[in-house]
Image (cartoon, rainbow over all chains, first blue to last red; front, side, top):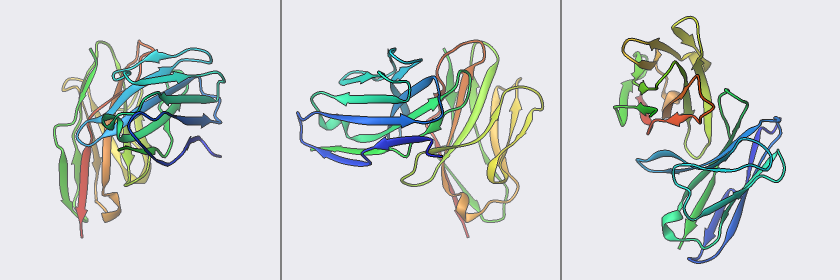
Length: 111
Length: 114
């Protein structure tokens, strides 16, 4: 009964380093999403996927890349981290037309 | 374009009093509407949704929301607030006719004092 699992939960990066955030869902959902949450900004969509092998840009895609090689996994990559990418990142999944199930988040600090 | 407005950054309520968290929306067609709650250091949790039918929707933890098409609103309500209801609340909308993503409001912080 895991739902949506995000790893890692916390990470500190130096400017210019790269990393990958992993999101896994066990609900057989077609859609998956990556959001970032910043104070006063609410949730902003970074990238999303409507199915295995497909990805699309959201509201704030610059500096991020994603891949959906398997239906249950959605990876978010930062190739060269910047302090502006300090944020809390949330993954979510959904069925077509359904509400979202969220992971517990990854708190990323870039110094 | 779709949008969601939560006009209050923060709502303060005394325990036992009724609470309302406001949400208005703009979509080109008929909406799907959602409320989510976020407790500190946690992900968002689903509270309730309006798809069709009765304008008063009941959800988790005693919360309910009223869909008002003429005012394009979907306010979250609870008859008697608890201190444990203190959290960040997000309203979200999607145009029923599209496969688009949910659009979230910026969130309203609810603080319930004993």
